[in-house]
Every structure is written in structure tokens, then in C-alpha cells.
Length: 237
Image (cartoon, rainbow, N blue to C red; front, side, top):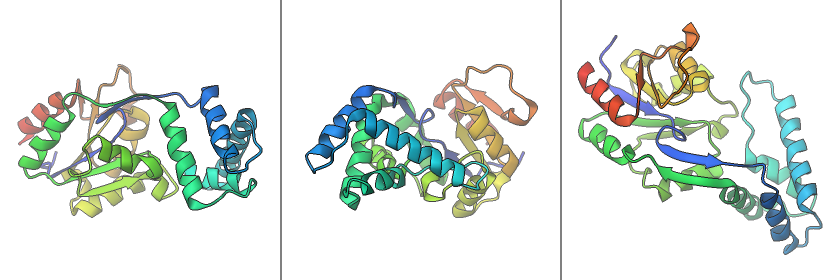
């Protein structure tokens, strides 16, 4: 194993402790009421149905192996039918949708401590996440994460998501390191481990409760939390 020169993190489930529920009727009822103030004639059930249909259409028409659906584009298409596809309306609906769906949203207790240790240790840092750029950048700022990373890559910027190896390769290239000189830290065997391994990176899986993983999804280290990862990295020198 090559010397680790840089670290790339996943966001949600790795640095941020989050729980969302996008199936709640309340989300669509409130969004519909909000849109009615601007002249829309739509109910919560109708809005839910329209959003679901648009997401399905976009997924079916996408030729990517791991397609990513941009929520801004989904809302833009739905609001266009109501004559409300102004950029501000689209953005505000995306953010309201996210806010209403969040049930838990906080940093893991050790997140900031470990990020500060890595910066003090001179490690270049990047963030690579399957995330909606329309609200995830602001969520990073809310939690004080925006000052730690040299580069932030979110799947909706590219139209495809993890485990597509292109994303991991781009993150390494931006940091100016070879994949074998970089460690990726994530919480999902399917999305994080598989793609990073295919790229040639060292992989640490955090907080995973899956004991039996296929050979192609075996990380180099399983960490209880970020503190455990930091201890493992220091041992690697």
C-alpha cells in the first residue's frame, strides 16, 4: 500500500448524521400550499404524482450506468406546467422540500475534531458525495464544514453518481495525487467502497453494520467512527 497523501470523504452518513423521510404527505401538502400563493392550482397529491413521474422519466431517458436525477431539473419541469419555473421558485421549492423531509440533521460528535487534525497534519481534503448541490452546499455551511475542503464534488454537477469510478478519479486528479496515494472514507459498501476500489484507492468504511461483504466490496479497514479512522491513518504513517 502506498503512502497516503490525501483524504476524500463522503458527506451524509460519514461526516453528517442525517435522517430524511421524503414520503410524508405533509411535505407535498405544504409545498402545494406554498405554490398556491403564486397562483398554482395544484394539490399535495397532484404535486407528489407529478414529481414522481418526472423523476421516472428522467431516469428512464438517461443512458448513464448510475444516473443521477437533479431535483432542480425535476421541479423546473413540474413548475413549468404551472407557469412558475422561475429560478428562484425552483430553488426555493427544492430547499423547502429538503427542510420538510429532514428528521435528523447534525454532525457526528467527532467530525470537526478529526477534520481539524487532518488539516493540521497537512492532508489535502476533498469531498465527494451523492448529493443535491441545490441544498447540500448550504447544509455544509450550516454545519461549519465549508472551510475544510480543497474541492467539493456532488453528483448532480455531473449527471451520474457513485459508484461510478469517474467521480473518484476526478477527485484524485483535482487533489493532484494518484489514486493509490489517496484514501476514500465512506459509509456505503455499494456506493463508496466499490467505486473507490475500482479506481485503485485505499478505502475505509465507517459505521457499517454489514459483516458479510462480497469480495469486490471489501474495504482496507472497517472503522467504528472517524476517530478510529484517524488512529488507523496515523499508524499507516
